[in-house]
Length: 266
Length: 266
Picture 1 (cartoon, chains in turn brown, yellow):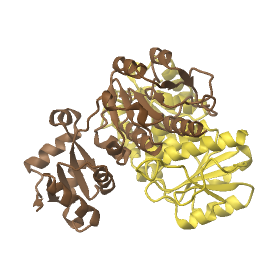
Picture 2 (cartoon, rainbow over the protein chains, first blue to last red; picture 1 turned 120 degrees about the horizontal axis):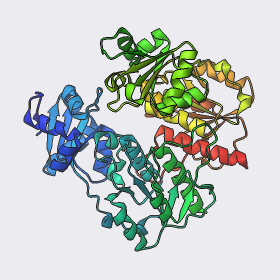
Picture 3 (cartoon, rainbow over the protein chains, first blue to last red; picture 1 turned 135 degrees about the vertical axis):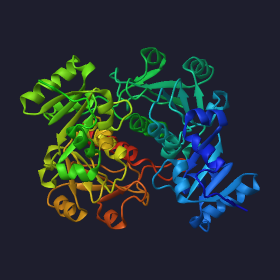
Picture 4 (cartoon, helix red, strand yellow; picture 1 turned 30 degrees about the horizontal axis):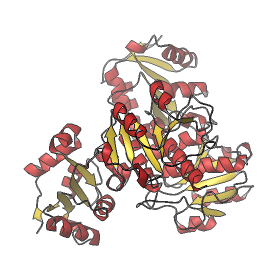
């Protein structure tokens, strides 16, 4: 049976709320996800929260019911609470009906099997959680094998990144690696590294993209370092017809990813 | 000569800070933009701020100098201030060197001349300022004639939208219209309306997109109403290969826009 928590001062609420901070997420090995759509996506992908907070007035919603049962059966805890506390947990003014607290997902590079997909996304030093989440969402949409985060990226387990991923955090394999570890891993098997760059004349529609293709997107403000670009098998550019010199990183990644799919389909 | 303002309690600071709120923007006919890159983009597009706040320690930066002169020559005011006040104005923890206060830009539909570009972006009921700004940035990149916002969209002059546009707010013609006004305007001249939809089997790569093509993107959560879809000349779908059923709205718009460019090029 769900227990009731209605006080801000409840120790579990206070502790879970600290998970909006990266340091606490790391220390606890836990993270927050918010909203029925995302928690349902997670459940369908086999991920149940350790704690599932839900608004009392949505207890009868079939999707809330579909969470409570398995959570409790799996040893987790379902907690009936108030919209205010959900808002406090999620940091959102209009919180969804549920907030889940999940065990951090594994992100070791050697979990990835490059033979399972023709396209892989790679991003280095992403700093915007919205971009990271949106790239995960795109990775799901294009059927990418996974997203590999290089060097110091924003935390993929932040509430903002999880929200922007719309649940793809739970369905797309994720890895984190230093460039110095990624490169030997990449070169230990088949696959070409395609870099998105502003410093090339090669149009993004020109190359073939034989599978597996690893698509590398650089930092939002600076792009990728020259030394990374030098390791790419192919550098390509998306033409810019206006005043600005670059696209949003998540947008550029998506335009490229759909183009690779199109070329691979023949 | 720039004047100095270092007190939070300064009436101009207090008044300008209220521009982070939509109601005050509307009442004053002014909006805020932040960061040297965006203000420079605006200046190059012929837009100077009415007030230009800059951090004292960046006064010698050539791009700050390139703003101060024209602002004062044009009857605006340059104001030397502190990083704390810039942060207070922009709502950003790490503000850029400058914050500008601009007159609201015109958004009447009849300003647009459809013969000037082969591609136009249209979005209805966008609710996320980051998406709106990112779509403006993409509109610039693809050389779109403009962005037309249909019905109740998030305010394009919010700090967040301006920031995500990376300056494209100043370079891409923008219009706002009710659907009931847009449709007669659209049908009063040449052009096809292409809707992005989940409820069609037509692949987005299949159609020709003769100019001018008007590309319609629906609300993030709900897509476009059936009645809007019924008015589209073509409905197309971007294939989804994963678990989720949709892309981020700004991402979907960009994938479509680059595909239209590609098809129009031949």
